[in-house]
Image (cartoon, rainbow, N blue to C red; front, side):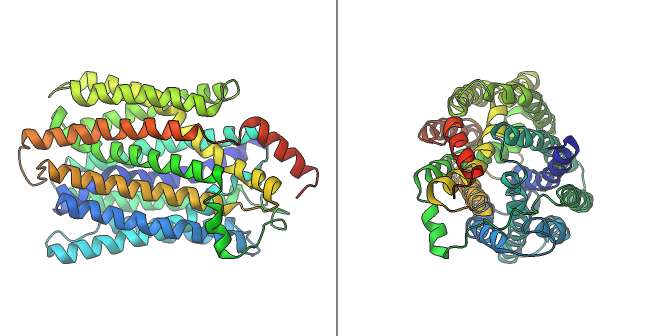
Length: 442
């Protein structure tokens, strides 16, 4: 595969991630501390959006696999979904500040549902292009590595700029301006990806399996698929709680909301810098064991940062952020590389080829995990007495923030890694399946 194709395709991840991480990193905080919703209601808004994603993503996967058009089965969604997705992102940051609680809650739910729908329509087909573009085990990891690095840049932009804007006096107008700029970047990046993969699906649509919809539900119960979905669910709760709790931790434990943007940048740069190293390590070590080791390290770092740091400990906080990013670089790269392999494996084992459906299930369970994380985070903060309108938080409220930032993600990262050990589509088995499929076996 040409380098320019890899980069062009990966640019699309920048467009998706800049919006995705801005929402995941800042939207809960925006609802509680800018819009003024109670933490439990704000968490419910996030949960509503993610539960809808749980339904929406696999349906988009089925739709994409069954689509026939002159623009391709997957590329067509990038071409015609880029602008609606960008607009739905901009609408999230235009909630009224003077409406009743009921009206604000309803509008927030409607906005997040629209965003979730348009995101799925673009992201599921986009990610499902990987097994179409290449069938090489290592080249897929390389391609996802390019995506991960651009996603890392988007993480800094999506999260840090939102937080920097939030430090001003006119937060709501600034967020609205920011969202328009982000929307333009999102749409442009996705269209660049669509242009870069032109022709990638040529000849790739004849072997897609058309089966009854109930068969797609059965796929989720297949042992390898179920293992990956459980892993993704647990990991999504971990990362969702971590990212959503970061602004709270920076403001109420470290004492400076703005340092969260620097922390995010340090974390992301460290993670991105180590991605090439992780790519090389995946050629020498079993990916499952590598993830167990790195996630265990990340859990230790989280525990130390969450419960040992005190007010004004900015430098130790940033050092901890860098260590956490280094530890989680494998988590950013490795999990998405498992999913394309299922396409060949189940074509080899069952005689069925499903490209978008596996990615739809993967994204679906990821979104559900993020929704659970936001909901649990909101309940946890409220249970410990957190009040977003208070000038100073109680000791109990701060303890809740520490638990949300440290203990919750650490525990779920470890459990997810242990579950993954049951996954059986290793490099050796994948290569057998790929060679059999390439040789003409169904």
